[in-house]
Length: 473
Image (spheres, rainbow, N blue to C red):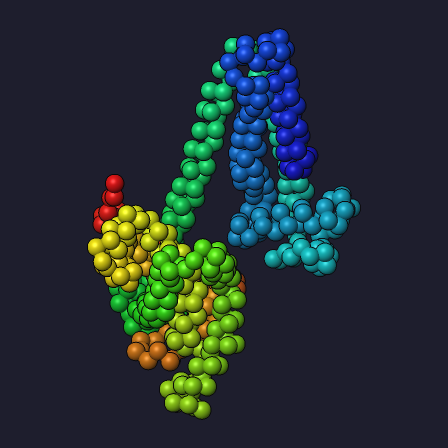
């Protein structure tokens, strides 16, 4: 049975359990809710959660584990066909493609099957051999058995859990407490999933970074002044030009975003009327919802040609092309304005009104109150917002790809094309890559470096906010 239909059946059983649990509790209390420990809905949710939790856990675990188990059972049939991972990928695609072709394994021939699969959108890496076809048949049989076994076990568990929960449903049951414990467990599980995902990402970066440094010297990577990858050999993979381009573009973007974002936050929080704030703040934050690729196109088609007209051959002659550090920095700064403005606005609004009133009562003007009272009180939070914006700019990719160019160089000229770490990660992993070569594995080393830099910036921002935050009564 398809997983979607199975999930729908489980939800229907849970819904039926909710109705029956609620009715059973009310029936046991003679319809008097005062004789019940909890509200009627709590008894229904107690039965529904008893059905959903074990059933969904089984489905998730089975879906995660079953494919690898089936692969191990089928892999010996094609052990002599080459790379096991690639061959098993072909086996799965052949099995899926024959379902699309709606043909049985007993009537299909291996010869010419690759072209037939390609005609229905299933790409196979190499010509289909008889052993691959036999393995695909075995894979299809095992996958079908796995699906039916999962269906039987899930429905048995759902039905059994519903019967067990209904049996213990009485008016004296502390259903509310059990539902609260179940919700707490669900929240803990959600937090653990987020933590486990982060740990998985870090471990993937670490292991591949270690593999890269086994093939390429770490000193040449961290202190090399040339970035020149070559999949034919003789690559120079020094990260310093990429770090310089990343920091240079981020610096220019912060020069744009911090003053404009901070000044707009001060205006919205201290000077703007409620009517102006009601439409100005949402309009400003619309910038935060624009995809970065749109900003990249804006840099490529508008900002770059405008800068070229002023600073290029037709103007001051400082700029050779529209793609440059200045182009990407200006557009990225525009993108970060709502980020800085929104955070700063919230921080400034958190300063107690009593401090403003006290300053004004002592004879200070509104501008003096902002300079000498409000901004000093909000400064730690504003500093944290600026550091968070810096980490956001360091991780930007599309604006850099379209606006800054692809040249990895060490230069102080903001009108030259440069590139960043994120842009090179994209270029190194574009297309089919051999992940046993340093030229492909270097992307993980770049990603690990970027992860450490942004993590340090985020930790520093949080430390500044917590260390220097003023506590007001």
